[in-house]
Length: 584
Image (cartoon, rainbow, N blue to C red; front, side, top):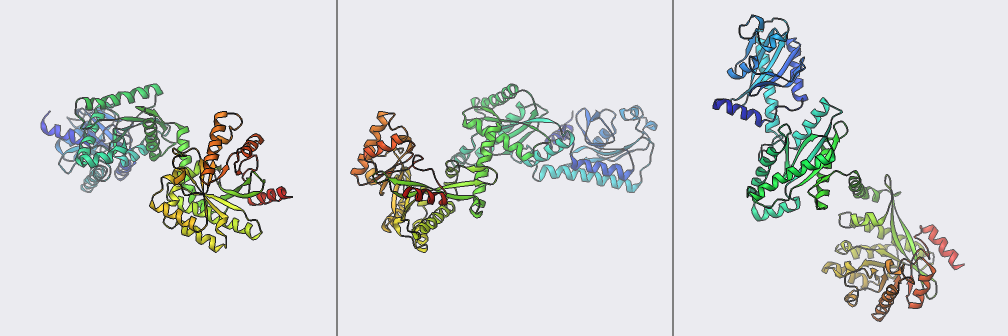
C-alpha cells in the first residue's frame, strides 16, 4: 500500500463514517439522486481497504461489495467521474459483482475532501443500458458535493471534538436517532466513563493548567478507543467523560466489561502514560432505542456513574429507584416557584404550645405544608432541606413569615394574644434585609413584637456570621423573642449555651419520646432543663406523645409542652375550635 493510499484511508477513518447506522441526512440525498435520474438504485459508496461500503443506499439490500472490480473503487482511484453505459459491453466490468447481480448501467462522481482525499463515490445504477447527458453529469457532481458538504458539516461544525478527534454529544444524539430509525425495537447499553471525578477538574485546572487536562483527555481517549470493541464508536462528552454503546447482555457481563475498561485506564497510571492519578468510574445504562431520547440516555448513564462513585464502587448499573429519587428532588426544586404563586399549594398549620403549670395555650408553632399538584402532600422534612440552600429559600421564608404574621394579627384582633413561632434558617439570617422585612410586615399588620418568636437551630445560631448576628440583634432590640430549636442535637449544646442570644430552648423530640423508658435519657433531660433555667432560658419540650412524658416533664419543672398528646398541627379553623373547646 502506497503512502497516498494510507493517507486516504486514515482520512476516511477519522471521519467515523464506516460501519455506522443509516443517516437520514445522507438518505435524503440518495433518494433525490434516484428520483432525478429515474433509476432504481443510488448509493453513497465509501472505498475501504478491501471493500465498498454504503453509507446510504436506495434499491439495494446489502451494505458492501468487494472493492475489486467495483466501479466506485475506480472512481476513488482516479478522482474522476465514471460513466459506464452498459457493464456487459465493458471488458473490465462485464464479469464484476455488479454485472453478475443484474446491473447494466453505472455513473459515479468522486467524493473528495478539501485536502484532496477521495473517499468514494456518489453513484446511480440501473438494470438497463443508459446514456448520461452533460447536464446529468453536472447534477451528479452537485449531488456528490452535497454529500461532501454533509460529511464536512458533521465533522467540522459541532460534531467532532477537535481535542480528541472523537465524535461529540451532538453526533451521539444524531447517531442514536439514526439507529432508532433503522431498528426501532433495538436494545442497547450506554457505557459512561468518567476518568477523573468532575469535582476534581477545577482543582487540576487551577494547579496544572488547561494544557494538562487537554493531554489527559487525549491520552485517555486513545486508551479507551483501543480497549473497546472496534465496532463501537467512542464519543467525547467533554472534560474527561466518554460514552460508547454496546449490545445488551447480562448485568454480570456488562459489569465485567466495565471492569476491563477501568483496568485498561489504570494501566496508564502505572506506566506513567497519564499525568495524574486516575479514578475511573463507569456508569451502565440499558435502554430501548424507541423509548428514550439521546438526552435521557446520557442522563441515566451519567447518573449510574455518579451513583457508583458516591457508593465507592468502580462501576454501577442504572437504578430506576435512585433515578426516581432524584427526579422527585428535581420536581420539588422546580415546583416551589410555581407553588409560591398558587394559592392552592402552600399552607400553614399551627401546633399549640401549652403551659405545663396552668395548661393554658400560650401560642403555637407555624409549620409549612405543601400539597404538590402531582406529588401530593410533600413533607417539610423532605422539601425544606432541599430548598434552604437555594435562591428559593428567601421567597419561601418570606411567604411563611407573611402568612404567619397575618394569621397572628387576625387572632390578636379577636383577642387571642398568642405567640406564634416561625422557623428561620441560617441562610435567611445572612440576608441583610431579613429583620427589617419581618418588622415592616408586623408593623403593617399592627402586630405587637411579642406576638412573634423566631426559631433557629443551634448550629445556625453558633455558626452565624456578622450579618446574621446583626439581624438577630435588630430583632431582639425590637422585642421579638428567639428560640433555639432542636436543642440537644448540636455539637456543642451546653458549652456554648451561654453565648447564644436567645430566650427559649426547645428540647428535641428524640429525648422526650424516651422519657419514662430510659433512665439515662431522663437524667439528660433533667440536666438540660436545670442548665437552661440557671442561664435564664425558658424551656419547651417538643414531641410529647403520651401522658407519662407530659407528667414527668411537669415534675422536672419544664415550662411548656408541644406534641401530638396535646394536639397535632391544625389548620387555622381547627386550631380555633381546639382552643375554644379547651377553654369551655
